Amino acid sequence: MCGIVAYIGSKVARPILLEGLKRLEYRGYDSAGIAIIQNGHLSVQKKIGRVANLEAAIEGKPGFDGSLGLCHTRWATHGGVTDFNAHPHTDDRHGIALVHNGIIENYSALKTYLQERGHTFNSQTDTEVLAMLIGELYEGDLEKAVQGALREVTGAYAIAVICEKEPDVLVCARKGSPLLVGIGSENEYVVASDGAAIIAHTARAIHLDDYNVVKITREGFRTTDIHNTALSPKVQQLELELEQIELGGFQHFMLKEIFEQPKSVRACLGGRMDMREGRVVLGGLAAFAKDLTKAKRVILTAQGTALHAAMIGRYMLEDLAKITCTTEYASEFRYRNPVIEENTIVVAVSQSGETADTLAALHEAKERGALALGVVNVVGSSIARETDAGVYLRVGPEIGVASTKAFIGQVTVLSLISMHIARKRFMSADQCLDMMREMEAIPAKIERILEQSQRIKRITEKYVERENWLFLGRGYNYPTALEGALKLKEISYIHAEGMPAAEMKHGPIALINEGLPAVFIANKGRQYEKVMSNIQEVRSRGGHVIAVATEGDTEINKHAQDVMYIPEVCEPLSPMLAVVPLQLMAYYAAVARGHDVDKPRNLAKSVTVE
Image (cartoon, rainbow, N blue to C red; front, side):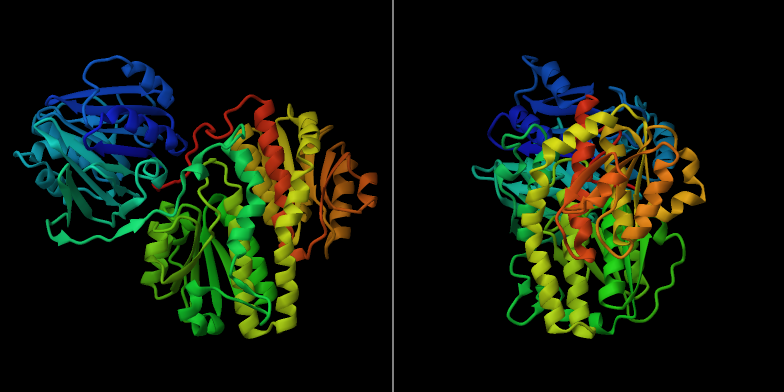
């Protein structure tokens, strides 16, 4: 959730740390802080607000020109947004500084113990407890003190630690939160919670596993577990390019990523559809072909936008593959004593592959004997490593906090998985080929929608002052309505509610008053006439209807105040088109209301704590 960057090498650390922190600011931006050791002295600066505030605070300030340091951008969990609660946190005896992503669950008991040992605390955070614990155990060996402290804590952590008594040592560790060690040239190392902060310096990195501890000096590094058992991690090549994380002429990353969706779908489909044989080819699932064919039940588990994609996947698996399927909030799944029967497949859906709730649900499913599959974007992420098999999205890094191209990628992959299983069970080669041709045409159809962006902007600006909106859809596009409402809430701070169009009559219709914007997904499909009837119910009560309709539908103009058109497409794939105008509406609403689109308040990109 928070952003961590650390550096040790021959260069001045400060510009490298600040550059990396700016690239990770989307992971948390309540506050930021930096700690650098120069000439054997530890200097620390912390500031609430954005990284720019921190940068200004240390400009020209002595003590921040050393070649060993760490920094952090915070998304608050324990303790309010204050300078004291910002990271890095320090101990009170040895000049130890620590940055942390995660939650120390037993911090209260540890804090009581440390207070009894005479330690004085300055913040409300669980992280300061960990810094003090390392200080309590420190006897001249930072690596040993970190290992000892981590044997005492429960919870999740990605940490980087330095000590002014060991000015040539950086110690890092992880459990449950991502952390990478980038291996540069000239005996330098960049550690970060995301490859975006590393790629400008090196593409070679180690993904730390749970309970890994790494001690880094300018001469090299060694990796152990928390019991000091030596490990041999694999150095991997980051599948990331610098231009992918630059704005490239767009005002915001969210807009860039909306416009990247045609390219993202093409990349996601590449090499996965055999048009000659009429079948879907998913190499990541090849070893489990029989398990997929014999599956009696599929559980799709996720959070937020990924859950909405999973809901569309559920419709498709039931419709095409004729498999009983359910969707589950990952945060509730493992606390319900879920029933996992024989031949059950659990699919974890997550852009980052680090979503804590989804990862915990995956662990629970595996514990109960389910085949665990992953649909993730980030190569080498925790979910990708812990599933039995999976399919990568291949949509490229997503920087905007409000997910757009990852949603399209998730729906694309779930469509491919559904077709893959359906072909093995009931679907003929010709039926599969027809569906694949429809899939192949999706990128060009999204491009046609994007050509209407200025028109969508004008429609949005008519309603942007309204504080309550409804989003309504049926069938495959009920989850699309949920996603449209979520996007509007996330970045424009407008209250929006998504629901099945038919559910409106069962209570929510009381919300409709004169001028209330009601966004209907009213594309041509099996339930078109039903949706038109629902539109009339809103119109008769004074609501203003904004419709997402199929090109060529002139009838809709008689019933809606405003219409956004999408190309004709088969119904199972319609969410991939219908969601695009809703993404643009949310974006333009946020811009019109003067909000920071890429850094919405209270949100972080990857939720790596429960």
